[in-house]
Length: 390
Ligand SMILES: *Cc1c(COP(=O)(O)O)cnc(C)c1O
Image (tube, rainbow, N blue to C red):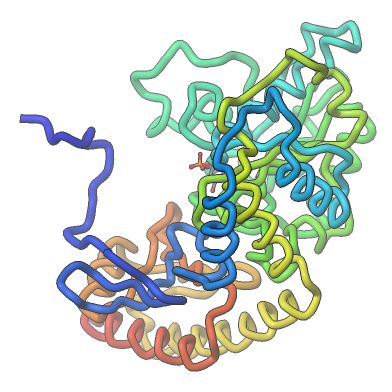
């Protein structure tokens, strides 16, 4: 008999009832060190007092009104995002997938308004993840995600990840947009070289194609800059954000330049919940804390410390690990055995990690993890690896 909850997830036999910072307490009282953070979502940890105050403060005032009205909390958060990024305008969603849908619609509308409705091809990359809607799975195009769900939304073409020569050969003045994650998350913490991102920007400029960056996982301070593309010194035309932006409250956004968003006039898009006062009150508090140079400098400092210890871990378990990759606190351990085995061994040591493709174990802790907690995490990962040593 089918479970009451649609069985689309292979769930671990553990449930959590409360949390504090990097710690999550299971229903049996066991405390786990959480290096998954709900897959890069809880950027300030569990039950962060500032976020709890923002949420409960707003909860006592007004939860939901509809985008039929002005929403001051939404305008405040949009203003903060515009001030700190390339963007001129923001649309709020409830998830990364919805942000991907709008990014795709915005690119199509841009070319349609330019009198070129046939210009719909969006170039994407193998190993990408943009969400689970019919549009987002068509964008990623992997067999695993699309099988059984056709016919797919047309217009997408996947190129080998990071292959600039393939992009040069594929991009033309018929290309509507190029869409990519500066660091692939689900794909296995696979960063693009800064020089390659600059080259992609230049190819887009040359052909007129819009550059859409998916920073749903790598954005919001995760890499030690507010957004990962800042390292390359170039900006997209459209950017998808979600995961970290709500600190655990469902919230996503599409950021865009005025030019890219020009077609999105009244009536062209909408959302019942998107940008409601509760989500935006929490999002504004997350932004206030994370989009701060001193906070981001700390993320980078802790990243160096963490990486150094992880290099030691890799050296100590050569039959388990192959190397460390990633940026900031978006780290991956490339494994020599299935990463799911390490996730499982981690449960025995009360540590939570997340598997990814390309045989990679993801470490995505809250960005305010302390030095002591990093040391404790590495000690637990060391014991987990020891249990798997050949
Ligand atoms: C998680 C993720 C998404 C989808 O976000 P949801 O909130 O699950 O819809 C899209 N893109 C990237 C890069 C992601 O990591």
